[in-house]
Length: 251
Ligand code: ZN
Ligand code: ZN
Image: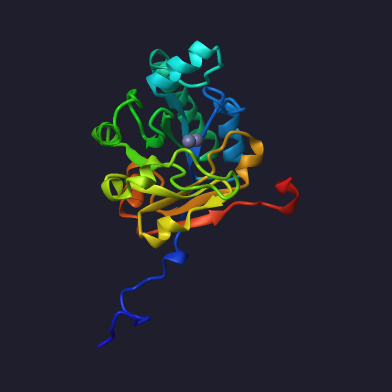
């Protein structure tokens, strides 16, 4: 006998297994972050993280042109720089693994400020144009066997109305094309993602040191790219975790 609430049988408690402490949304000084990639690796490595993705901004062509015309600084990884950016991440990936047993997965935040959507590509291998429509971007991400995550999809209580709301407004259309949606971004929780039962992850959107103390994901998987990506896709063993370390660090 024994129904679905039977405590015995073949059900094992996943809390007894090793969960990976993960952050899939981190900016370095290759775009608008404060720290160089090597310092980010040292920081997360020393804090005992298992998996990180560095996801610098790649900006859409329309916004890029507008910003340049205004003479504004435009910190993002441009198309011509993308190869060098990936090489830097691969070098640091090798060092992170050797020195800290930290898995660094190369990524990018495909940043469309023109049509108002930001999309993470985790395990990206080639430049993707953020000017493309959402569906085409996600198709490009998937053709590289990378993961597509919808960033900060709803209004942020800490920052007020969120301009980048396109993905949420079109949630019916986009719900299933993304591998996951951010249920938490830095200090903000988006309970609607849980209510709608979307696949989720939680990330820091790290730009500077104090952002380390923020929402993160715990994932039950082997520590390698394919297993971590599968765990995000199946979204069965993903937990949201507020990383604080100690009270003094809250600043
Ligand atoms: Zn963003
Ligand atoms: Zn970001």
